[in-house]
Length: 187
Ligand SMILES: Cc1cc2nc3c(=O)[nH]c(=O)nc-3n(C[C@H](O)[C@H](O)[C@H](O)COP(=O)(O)O)c2cc1C
Image (cartoon, rainbow, N blue to C red; front, top):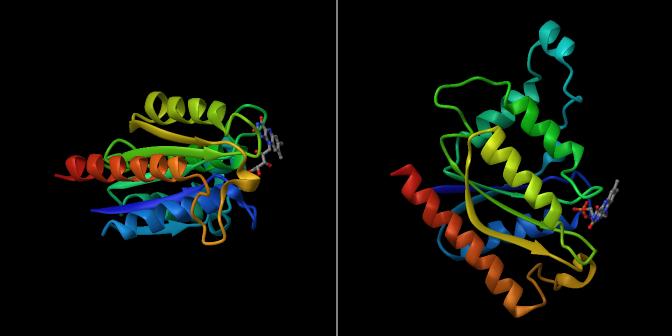
């Protein structure tokens, strides 16, 4: 059983990348094979139907779809932009959804969602949207446990863990729940 972690931000100093990397570390500390990837390495043009018709799905979207297919569970850690999902993340999901495989890459694995922002809501509104896109739009199984981490600027310790012990525990719980669900799904 293997888990994949990535963030919906390409920014070098992204708080969401920090949280995604922490997820990977937590999984590894629990003896789970886990990999972190950076969406900056899978940059794609904005979805355009004419572009798809003339050139097909971009290679990077095909590569990212194939990557998702290698893991039993995926954690997506998303920022919140204007109370919703960042275009980068939605665009990535939209392109990947255009790669048709059997079984479908979204329907055949388990997802967990998390997010952080400097504000009080901790990307909660973005998480609500992401859950809907994954479950309703893409037919994915999304575990009920999730993490919205407020105050991103001060939330992380030097070693990448969360300063607040309770929050570290909650986040660890989400990663563990993803592992449990992914194991069941893969069986
Ligand atoms: C266009 C834009 C809109 C934003 N809207 C929100 C928002 O609605 N809620 C929020 O909590 N933060 C909002 N922010 C602040 C982001 O949460 C903040 O920039 C965060 O650090 C981005 O995530 P990252 O650190 O992973 O790159 C917005 C930022 C940008 C650039």
